[in-house]
Length: 376
Image 1 (cartoon, helix red, strand yellow):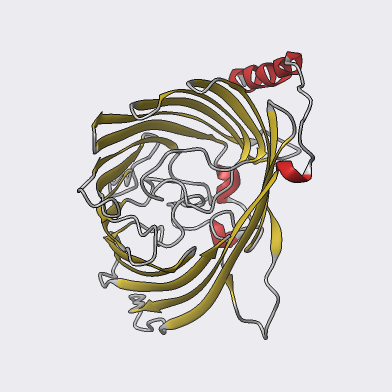
Image 2 (cartoon, one colour):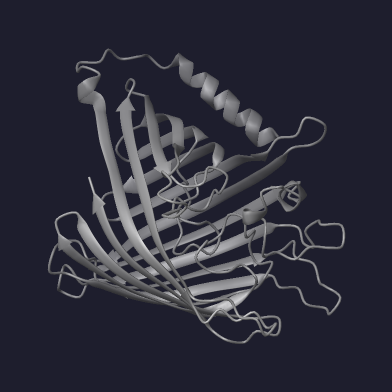
């Protein structure tokens, strides 16, 4: 609560900043952006362990996002975005094309006010509302790429161009509000460093902590599609608490071919709130590690990535983690090939191969994604 009060104090204090007159019209201050993706997604080798295996599935899915940003004055900007997807699912903007040509749902995906102040080397800012996830990450092990948290984040940045960048940020996320009891919150923070060791050699390191309070409001949510994976007790509560410590980093080497840098990365999480089950298992760690070659920035260039993963069942809160990997405790690999066909038009092939760490099923689930995306 102290963090929240400090955040409000900081926000209120910005009212003392002078408001500068705008020299341009409102239309000139608006920036539009967006993307649209069409995907074929396949699910194969879906073993259940009961003798009645699930059939293969072939889905056609779309994702559309359209946003705008506008500067209100020298210190305040507004960020809005609408997107497809089930509004009650926070970790996917995908819409499956089915239900007899049903129209996709479109909803406000992002809407926040940013207050910022500073120079080119030092800045402080606060985002408030339905915000863009500010966390630096190397994978989706803790936070799915589609998640847009609700709450406040404060950020302080020191940078020297072509040398280093250092960020400190605090998050206060409103997870669930109830009228007759305590609300569910996530309080967290992260520090992040980007450092150019010498020309063509860069490293970046991040350390974060994310603590959930009253997480059982999620466990007992009626939105069953997003409450699955983590272990529960006989009362329907989570077996574990969730206090996640997340460390990630990357090493980038320029190869002499500007379009083909080599990047090695890793993302590790441990849930210090995990509890042992009746067998003595804690299920509290997760790891993604991999290598990527290429940027796939222009037609004729490609990027290739190989990722290995091993995530225990209570390592992360599955409601907000990577939606493309089942959250029942998995290990496996992800292969990705990106090919820009034309400017702002990209073709991508992804294969996700995972098998359970627990239970009777030991076969590998195969999930394929064939994407065509355009950006504007």
